Image (cartoon, rainbow, N blue to C red; front, side, top):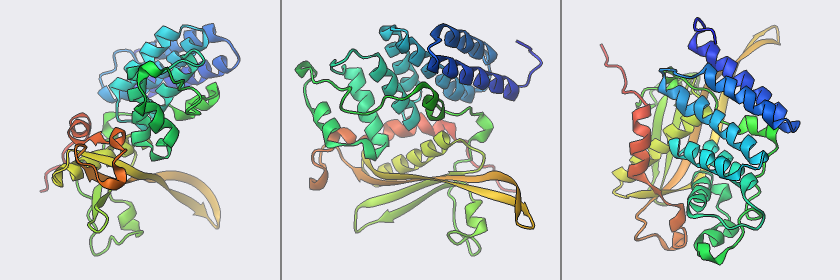
Length: 319
């Protein structure tokens, strides 16, 4: 490796090698895929920025786990996928891709272990569309019952499709300062000034008992913006005196700006990313009647805050 390369160029090299590894995996060349992943790991080895390890490092680990599963090394694939998830436990993409790897590695008809059940629950906690009755029934059943989990969720993914699902490379500079994105006289919803705001925004709905938690940032990855919204949700639950919360709905929006000349678009750039979560703050020991069976969907607000708060720097002092 060339030590003169900048961190951004080394990350780019690692991403290109990872892409080629997944193409080789799709063609059945698992040995070649592992060689490329070894090169990708070497390209970013020793990076000082901790965000490289929690993004590209985890992405490479999950790709390697998928290759190992394809080679029949189910135990190594499982351990690597679970380790990657534990390193970034509140990232929906990481959880879902880890579950894809476990689905590929699990023997047909096998029952999920306790670790695998926790991972499947986390997928649905972060992506409400996955909180199906079939999954709820599986998680409610005793592991000893031996109910197979592979048919329960359609999480299998072709190797090339996996590339789009893996976490994108990040740098610490991408993390927006933790501050409220306050609207002013010139920042009405949908205005240019409003679209350029960064930070969190909370909207309470007392009649429903819910809160809309929103986070927006310029230049951040979709994963990091989603984690910002989840941190805002955890803070809202704790402020309401509730130790947990259920994500009822989620949505992501990317805003782009076009540079055009006489109607011809010359360039396009991403100007802002937003994640909006609709949450229900709850006490898992006294759930509302409508969610009495949803205890498995409750996220621990204090644990979420402890994991995610260190990612976002405080705002710069004014003056």
